[in-house]
Image (cartoon, rainbow, N blue to C red):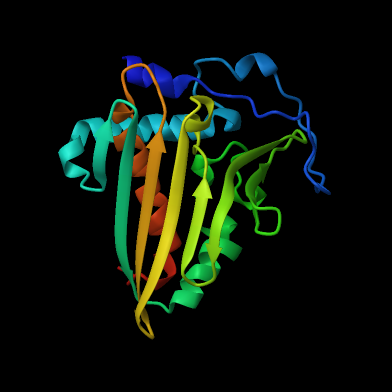
Length: 222
């Protein structure tokens, strides 16, 4: 039960510092007492709810079925996802960076709307605007090489509240004009009761979903 309880805890993003030139969104009254509630209802808890569902699925199928978790330990884990994409590297990279809101699932957001995400390469961060005027700084852009590499630093979702640090790297290698190998790795370190290895399958499931959405335009339709 301990690892499930971890995923129920949710952090209210700080609103003490505004974003540079933020765009206004309709104000919505918020009951702050619900933010720390163990309830998994409402858009503020959407990310935690999705992580819980992914964790339950991972527990049912077993970690052995999730080959993308390459290394685990009490204080860290490493994920690796490889996809062959029938697209030029430039097109895939453009969708990765410039169309983040088009492929990132709103189920793994604080606001419930992926359109609120913005990747600012000049400032070096990935942020999400909240409907009450607040914001979440999800990750920092640490390495950017056009059409080849994007590295983001930070803890996704509940990992941020837990104080975990991670390096999420997207590497693109164009093997033919219309064929690109995409390799996604996520190295996470930190401390949580019960060990980080208990969370790895959940994070793996979520990240695989995002990668599948990223490459969806080039996947054959059923």
